[in-house]
Image (tube, rainbow, N blue to C red):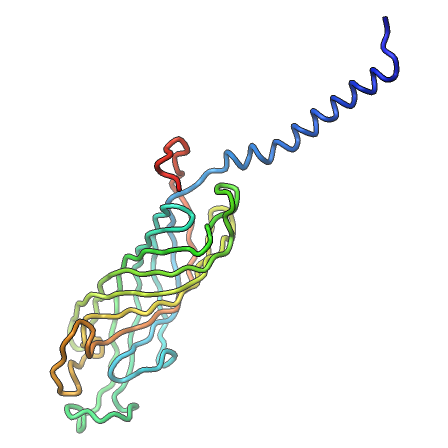
Length: 238
């Protein structure tokens, strides 16, 4: 018994449907096997400026800054970030309208070398990723950061103090394993000697951040993802 035209047409229809199903399943299979990475390492450049007794302007006396960054990604929304930056703080008591008793007859200009190390918690407003390794991930997200750190400064003497960085920024995924970050961070310090002068008002201060110096940073960094995440470790995923 031979096949008629309808039988042959039916067979070819089934074959075409099978081929179409196979082709459509390839991207899905690739997405399921797309590797995830839990670490990032990179470098950044930016600007740093002094905020204290002799300056209250966020854009005044900004100096070039460079640094390194290392991140641990807990999941697409949260990460821990460690940063090490170097820059200088510059300023002058000649440019301010406030009268300081201890500097009335001896105004100062200062240049302070600064090394800052901090560890921060970062929270992404949207799940951050390529969308392949995590369903619903976005290649662009704003984020906020909060942490603690240390500042090592040297002008006319060496000074070490703690810092509390608070910042905001934006992350953008350039490629699957390459990320671009732009951020602004205010670093509240526990020392009043980043400008080389302690208590120029001549008034005894009290409180953790009372009469202390601060600095702000604007930075753009590029990081590379590494250390593939274990896919069978369900407790290592969101």
